[in-house]
Image (cartoon, rainbow, N blue to C red; front, side):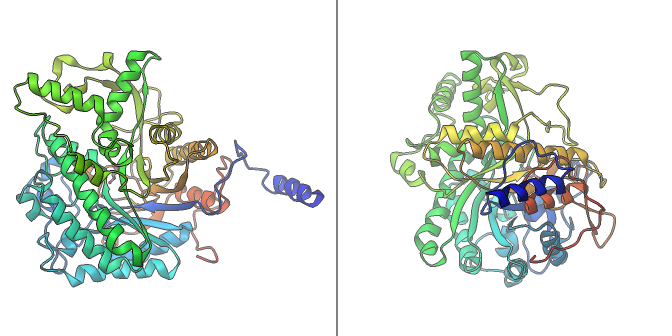
Length: 508
Ligand code: BGC
């Protein structure tokens, strides 16, 4: 007893600069990682026999849709720099690293009659390099770079996407599953379906408002379930890993504490993410009730012969229910929601916004990131984690698969440091209140091609010099802070790096 008291006091003296707001620490088996995605970092867009993705196609044919007219042809050149990337993971002391596979690098035409051995070799090299240093790979099968050929056949509008995706997933499990134990099928259904098919802020920019997203969501969920069952039935018994699904959730809150605004929040939740998660995690299965009813009623009034959100059959519901071993959540920003904030005058009909007629806003005085859509909402990650936990009982295991903050170029990134500290404190609070959080991935390991914003916004713990052919990587202040959190398992607001010289600690 006495000895531990002395050690405790000694600890306080030794860490006299420490400002640990709460007496909470991450458990030893909690895993920390960072995430990236193929198109955003790899480059090597036409290396060997790689096929074109929808992002290659869009950026080459419509460069004007990207803020700085750039593309991911070279990006951070991780295709050639993967060893340096792994070195950075060791510097940070990561337990895991989340990356995605470029579907057209592995299947140049999208389908598996021809598999690119060069593509397989690239990922084998990356996986083996990570495992050499005991860093566990987590693979996202799809992070937005569909083979262009499959897009020409309709992409996610074609129900055959379920066959195409299962075929691709099987190749990945077969070729990498002996060493990879963590799988994610899709990254962010809403961004794939709403932004790509309903709207124009991601490839393929279909702009089929009010129709595209819902059809895509239905096909995507069936494709996900196919890939999950393939793993569960045919690979898990011998490979023993887990397979899940990731969506993005903002920390929306009702503008006023009224029944009306709480209903607005529920509809916002259903449209933003529960449409992608209730079919998997809810007891009843299927799309959320209120949203389904609203869209069915509006569709009928608008002269559609059937609902723009086609329901699942009972058999499909059963097939999809329970098909995720964990709830993967990406989280960035948030705001207040209310029916009163909706801009009815400019409402596009039909559209997913018009279906629910909920508007949102974020107060002026919240810190603003380089991305126009990202503001730091107080306690936002905590809010999100609690909401998932409360929506789905059964103590669903959650993994934060992305969380981060954008700045402009530069090494001093105090805003990012403040963001990570607040988020991780929120994670600790949520865990303290019973949320079953298994791990956390910062987005991102390094600066990358930030989709429509090109290279104008930076999310990296490491800065990348995109002017330099070597794409040199330099740790930002936040890299040192994250490293310290991983090492000590506490969030210490007083910690300042002694210098900006990064080294690899013993054992990494
Ligand atoms: C995506 C990332 C992206 C990040 C920041 C997430 O929605 O998964 O690819 O870089 O947001 O915009």
